[in-house]
Length: 421
Image (cartoon, rainbow, N blue to C red; front, side):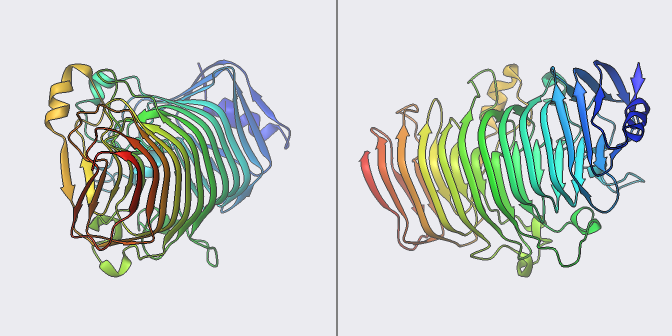
């Protein structure tokens, strides 16, 4: 079996020319470092993390990089292998490093890059994370989880797919499929002392902005298909999300909690200091088009939002609500779905109210069609301690469904269409 050294040696000998790694099995025990002006083509390869090792599979070299490309061909697979004992619960404890050492791909301060054509299987933590990266393409990526029997009982490993962290801009994320153990795509502007603050670039903006996410088809076992989260005064804006379809099947896969999750007021995210928490205007100018889902909630705005436009929501199957605003958060156990635990899953569904007041300004949702079970007892729209400013829902087609549940709200969205009231 070949190893990471064979790949690293090929990169070192290439002299800037594209590096083609031929088909075969490769065991990865040390991080493969990618210098600037590197094109790495994995042609039918299966790269698997060695049992027990703690390291990333790929990361860029030095404090910055440019023109770095990882291209998968012929069904190339990056495989996390078995859990190695490093997770959210052991991170930075008893001699363990931060859990980010389990990333499959990590780029920091890289411009003009691409990651394409890969299957990522059983990631030990997040599959990909990008920080202070710009002008990037992440396309044609499939996520696979293969150990449902084991992982349905395992402690949470936070198996996100693609994470854009602080300082990312001008990115395209396109043609993403499969199954993840947590958020499939997350744009999270946080300031963890164990992660983000280890990678500082003075003078660089911390905002996440001008990101296109399109053609996403998959299912997640926890949280959301697409998540936006910001605290510490860091903005997320000018985000376009287009053509998202949840592919979960009742009795075969988990039911996604939230297809699109925007904001959160959960104290650990902002170190339990309200001065660090998201403020009105931090998340703005978000556009969502063509969303089909059986999620418990299609769109959650759990903190304040401004200038959000949604066009084309189809709630199907056993989907429950279209829009929840305020403190509606839904937890579903276990994290990885196993059909024989179906009754346990349904019995552990919780609705939690985090009672922070939020503002929804200029939120417009157009063309909502609900063909989900008409006897679903949950209202289509659930609002908790929300101040509505110039919000409207139009083109609603949801005959036979309860419409609105509101608690402690100021104002209300104007709703027009065909539904029971």
